[in-house]
Each structure stands twice: as structure tokens, then as C-alpha cells.
Amino acid sequence: MDIQRKDVHNSDTPLLCQACESRHRGVCGALTSEQLLQLSKHSSRRTVEPETELVGESLQTKSYSNIISGVVKLSKMMADGRQQIVGLQFAPDFLGRPFRQENGVSAQAATEVKVCSFPKAAIERMIREMPELEHKLLEQTLTELDEARDWMLTLGRKTAGEKVASFLLLIATHAFPDNESDTVTFDLPMSRTDIADFLGLTMETVSRQLTKLRKDDVIRIVNNRHVTIPDLTRLSDRAGF
Amino acid sequence: MDIQRKDVHNSDTPLLCQACESRHRGVCGALTSEQLLQLSKHSSRRTVEPETELVGESLQTKSYSNIISGVVKLSKMMADGRQQIVGLQFAPDFLGRPFRQENGVSAQAATEVKVCSFPKAAIERMIREMPELEHKLLEQTLTELDEARDWMLTLGRKTAGEKVASFLLLIATHAFPDNESDTVTFDLPMSRTDIADFLGLTMETVSRQLTKLRKDDVIRIVNNRHVTIPDLTRLSDRAGF
DNA sequence: GACAGTCCTTGATTCCTGTCAATTGGCTTG
DNA sequence: CAAGCCAATTGACAGGAATCAAGGACTGTC
Image (tube, rainbow over all chains, first blue to last red):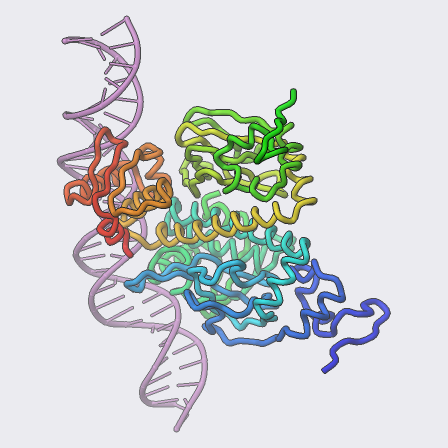
């Protein structure tokens, strides 16, 4: 199968990658046309349903992925079943823990998710050969670490009300990173139970706090999932900033 | 000033680095003798008192450091004064947030701390020139991310008793990474208030939980700081594993 | 359009942790 | 050794979130 094509602007870039929404923003942005071509020979795109397990907790993975669209939740579970979502990943994030077999977290699709997967060996070889790729990975990892630490403050020191507001703010800013206006509308990418597991609360408490925000007209909710935030500043106040 | 010396085994390694406890384990392990020499010309070692501010929250830092000995706490604070410690760093960790002016966390010495500091520009130039250095940084950052996510589970889903046990376990394993026996003795690197800020609790609750562990003979405490753990397995059970 | 199934909301109550306050204990200083 | 100081412990009480338990809303199926 030859997915290469001659093109005035992208003479050697694989077709698959030319059409890729994450082509420039993600780690692939560090690769040359030639490298993309080589990688694309072993890569495969697929679309998965919500709740699909993308990375197992201890099971060693044989591939890495780039998120093309959708939201992926990273979670940890205790022996007795208590669960904590430790991170959300959006396009064009890189999925997988380089240089280690086990990583102690499992990754599941929160929404419908499109990913582009590469064999583990191919990526690890390219990392060794391409300092630029490793640099991109370091940048993303540092950003994830910053976000994890922000969330630790939320988990450790905020009230239930502030936590729920913080979550809505997180989704609002990540779903529309370049939103200009103060009003935002979006669909929540996950259930009340998932939100609770992300905030270290129970489903009931999340529901009560959402109701409170709705009654105070900080948010509007239709169909449990569709949310409108009329004034981001007011939501931000509720989040403890 | 010439700190270079001829030596049969380390012909060109700077004296300062030859005696460095973190020479091989930390990021410096990625450097050649020549590079160490170049870096050592601009590096300086110093010892600071507990509570010394090493990195300001928003203040841009002009230098990076390696921790030679001691414990550094990374913390975030809310506008109203609520505080959360988001990480502890031990030797030979690298201190500082590359590629960004602000990092949103402040770093303070928890114990007496020895650091080796380098000018920001020198390190950033060497990172660009030395893929090995960047690789070491990525490895450390990935480890810190793993640890941050472990702690998120602790903050979000564990009870006060489990949190305090988890903290003791963390210190016990990091203070003596290669401890063989089941019994450990060490000094707590921080106050009850700091422990509370790390666990998302109050000082009083930490104190009560320590008393409970002491009464159950899971730990022994002398002088508020000196702790003995007779059986790590039993402590581990208390931590929720 | 009735039914089941799932997810979410709401209510009543319990319990853990926070808050406020007093006391103890260890360490330093004179 | 007493005084003073700061950190830690302990106690009494209050409050916020968890738990337990119903009830409601939306979706899809037959």
C-alpha cells in the first residue's frame, strides 16, 4: 500500500498525516516528512467507543498513541475499589509511558476517541535518533506535571463547591482553548460518577453542587450533559481564585 | 581560579564534581568531563537553612539547581492563604522548571539543604547541545509525574489515617531507598503543619492520627521528630494497600 | 405508548474532619 | 532552675461531605 503522494506543498508527507488534525500541534510536529512517512507505515488510526480501555494499569503496552480527538481519562484504583481519576487528556496529547513497562495508571476513553497508534519499538527508536521528538515529549510531560500539581491543590484544599466549579472551568478552557468571549457552551465529556472520581467526591455531592451553581445562575444545564456558562469570571470566583 | 586537577582516574573532572554526592545519579551523570568543567566554572554550592525560599512562585528564576542533600518542599498557595504542598524533592533531584518563566510553585528547604546551582542560560544551552541531558530530565520529569499521580490518589480517596500512614511510608522509602530490613528509623523532615499541608488535612488531625498509630504500636515517636517503624508491612496496611 | 434500564437528583441521617480553645511538652535563654 | 516561647497534643463542639434510601428524568425497545 502506498500512501505517499506528490503535492506542491507537502511533497513527501504521508496522506494520512496531511489530513491529521494533530499533525503540527502534537509530537509529530517534530518529525520531518521522511520520518513521518516511515512512521506512518506502521501507524494505524482507529475510533473507539466511550469506556474503551486504551492502556491497562499493569499490562505492558506494545504501542503508543496520539489523541486525534476526544477526551481520555487516566485513573488509578485501590484494592478495595476506590477510584481516582488522575488526569484528563485531550488532542493532541501523547498517550503512553515511555521507558517503563508498567505505569500504574489505566487510560480509558471518556468520550468517543480517535487515536493514531504506533508500535512501541518504532517510537522508542525514533526518540533515540531524534532529539526534537524527545524535546516535545519533555515539554508535554512538564505541562502534565504542572497540571497534576494544580489539581493536587484542588484535591487537597478546596471545598466541594470549589472543586465542581474548578472542574467546569477546566473543561471550558480545554474544550475551547482560544475562546474570546466570556460565555461558553459545551457538552460534559463524562458522567457524574466520573466527575466525582476526578474530584475526590461522591456522585451525590457533585450533583448537589451542580444544582447549587444552577440555582445561582452561574451555569445552565440541559439534558444532564449540555452546559452553558454565561460568565466565566463568575465561575472562576466560585472555583476559589 | 583553577579547580581542575590531573588525576589518574578522573583526568579532567572538576574537583568540585569529583566530590559531589550526586555526580552520577543526577542529571550531571549525562555530562562528559569536559562539559562538567565548563559548567562548574559557573556553578556554586551552598548550604541553606530550613524554610529558605529556593524558587519563588511567580518570580522568574535565573538559576537551576541540583539537590545534593536534604529535602525540598514544593508548594502552592491560594489567594486566601490555604496551602498545599505538591511534592517533596530529595537528592539528586533537579530543581527548576525548564522552558518557562513562571511555574506556579514555590520551593522551600524543608530541612537543611545543600544545592549546586547553575545559571539558567548555561543549562538551557547545554540542554540544546546535549540530548543525553534532556533525556535525563525527561526521565526525572516522568518519575515526578508518576509520583504526583500517586499522591493524587492519596489526596482524593484516602482517609486521614491512611494519608498519615502513606506519608510515613513515603519518607521511610525515600530516606532509605535501599533498606533491606523491615524496621526503619528516621527523622521527619518537616513539622506537623507541613505534613498537614502535604496531606490536605489540618495539623490537629495529623497529630491525632499519629497518636493513634503510636497507640497501636505501628510507629514509635521520640521528640516529635524521631520516628521508628518496627514493621513496614503493618504500616503499609494502614496506608490502604 | 407502556415498560425497563440507566443516570441523575433529592432527602434524611451519620460520621469524619475542621474549628476553636486549653494544656502539655520540649527547647532556649537568662 | 525558672521563665518564656513555640510546637504539638488533647478536648469539646460544629459543620460539611458521605452514606443510605427514594424518587424523577431521559433513552431505547417492543
